[in-house]
Length: 94
Image 1 (spheres, rainbow, N blue to C red):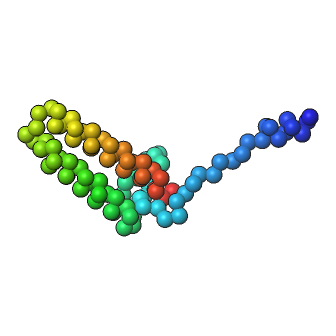
Image 2 (image 1 turned 60 degrees about the horizontal axis):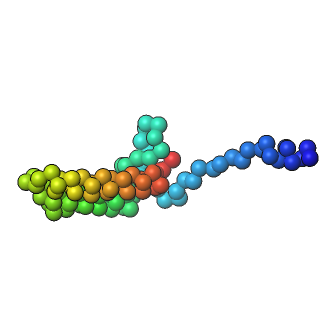
Image 3 (image 1 turned 90 degrees about the vertical axis):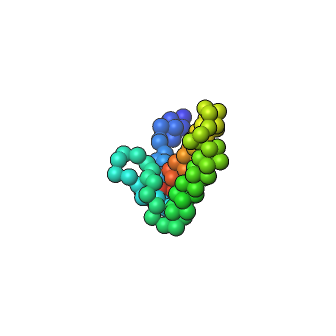
């Protein structure tokens, strides 16, 4: 009975997963991710993000569009930024 209590009280140390081939450099601030690319995969993902947003701005004609067109662009913009941040969090150098 005493042995079960001892094993139940032990806490396991959780190791943080560090990618072997990081795409981005961590920022100096206390966040866990960064967006400055350090290899070709990081550059491709950053260029892809910019390309998707420029294409969406041209496709929805943001300059001359009513609010419905601008709102569609904002949805695409926020989704692409969310995906980029999630990828950057997973692939940042510690």
